[in-house]
Image 1 (cartoon, rainbow, N blue to C red):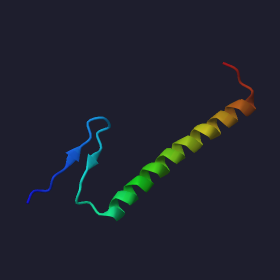
Image 2 (cartoon, rainbow, N blue to C red; image 1 turned 60 degrees about the vertical axis):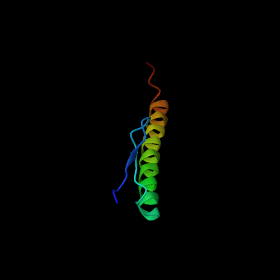
Image 3 (cartoon, rainbow, N blue to C red; image 1 turned 30 degrees about the vertical axis):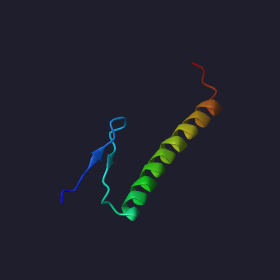
Image 4 (spheres, helix red, strand yellow; image 1 turned 180 degrees about the vertical axis):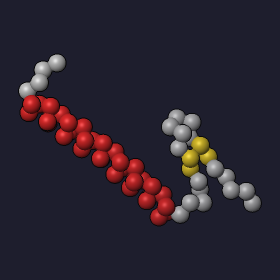
Length: 56
């Protein structure tokens, strides 16, 4: 039996139906953590930029 891997054409994500639930959850947690980190950095940048009073 072959291991079937399906690729989503819209975002390039690969779905492996034989991957365990824990591995899928771990991947999702890592992705969300990275997104949250970027979001925090952007908010901190905007707050610091606003506090400095610099106008473009």
